[in-house]
Length: 276
Image 1 (spheres, helix red, strand yellow):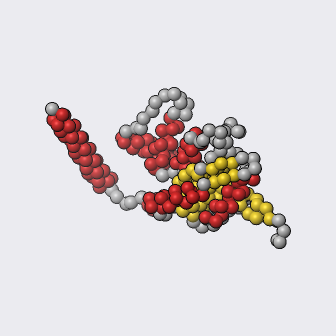
Image 2 (cartoon, rainbow, N blue to C red):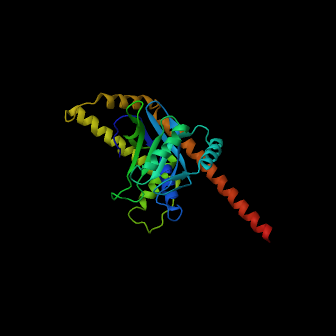
Image 3 (cartoon, rainbow, N blue to C red):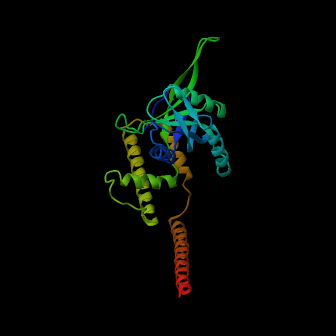
């Protein structure tokens, strides 16, 4: 799922950011039509990666908007102590449109970050789904005269860490049956699921290669380079050595699991002895 841009960097958003925005909207003050907050992440030459965020208290009416800037600064200072690599990259707002107040808020974040992005998340589901859009501002007008601001859309992609993938998969299982209760799967089930996904991807690659060799599909040089890079990363190891290494790791894992269960049993026994 991707939203195309006119120009500018690609915005990569992590699931924890979307969950945090949705949670802040659900916890908004009574009477508030939307919530805003600061986006944190990293920036490189071609992309902006949004890895975290926090909400910022604000009040707005038809005539004016007031944002608690001191709260935003204090929250960012505290966040830097935990994640010093994450910097302010822009701000977010719930809703599906950019208002006149959005321009004023964007001016503040322009002083905190170079060319900040503005992220909108339609929590009201105006179009039947939660549209997520990112913008960057550019000045327009005649030099020396009144200058306006134009918001240009950017490409939006979704990226996740392995730990975030576990949470996303858990939410996917509750989508069709929201009233059911689901828990985290065991480590063995997760390994099995990961192995199944790898097997499916290998099947897709093999199908592509067979279609190219038979002439059913035109070869793509970029795909070929990716496949060559993938093959070169596979270590050259015999089946016997691999089996020995795997069994050794499994034995280590079983030993750690056994010691962990033994420690838990000892602690539980000690607590009962103390009670007696």
